[in-house]
Image (cartoon, rainbow, N blue to C red; front, side, top):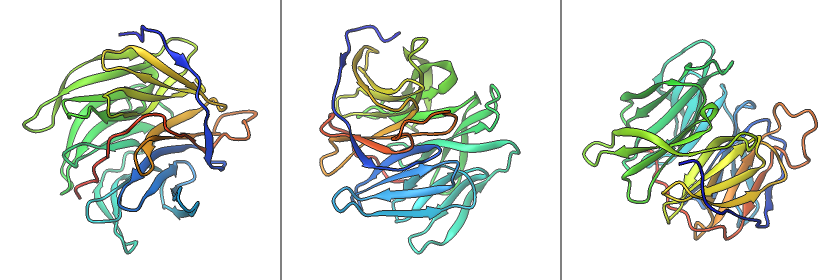
Length: 292
């Protein structure tokens, strides 16, 4: 599909966190704490935000951090430059899987319905085919999924777990895979939608309770929603060109949070690098914690 269909445009956004993140990314709602997790990759920072109180926290990591997700036993799993690490509730750091590849770093990641982490990588110079997508089990076992990726980005699953969506950003595509019920492996890769020239590039994504795919558009200044058949049915314009990722959060998972970036902009908008939110944008699906 190429995004055929009539899109409705508009919706008011609000500023959730005013910030100047170089590369804000990875919004994730943690239902156990009622907080939003998000990161600044290039500043090596993991942030939290509590919309009920406005309280924010900040933790610095020793390496560039591509993703931070809640764990079933508490703490976080981190997709870092040199591999996958665990941060315990008492702040103890330990490697789960360390794989040093010069010139490469961890990028976006997502937790599958079975609790495995699907972690992407990319080269700093964005060399074609220099990145990967891997499935990481709770015990640290790593299974390669894709080995010819340029910028591994948004990953998400349909509400019934039968489909997985994925974006390798420079391809301009949102792809869809079939998920095996027996072991969670994926097959049958095919395009769901293609972002047309001039509309930006697909970055982070999430899937709502209706099975529609929301995707943030890098250099597109918007977030879009595509139906399961690939039709474009909603566009929400935003004031910053580099929208990086999206996630539903809040008590009812009805608010759509959006991270943004300042990196590479010669004259950044005052809100570039902030976290924005579209209240009552839809209804999300609760994301499982990492099983490790």
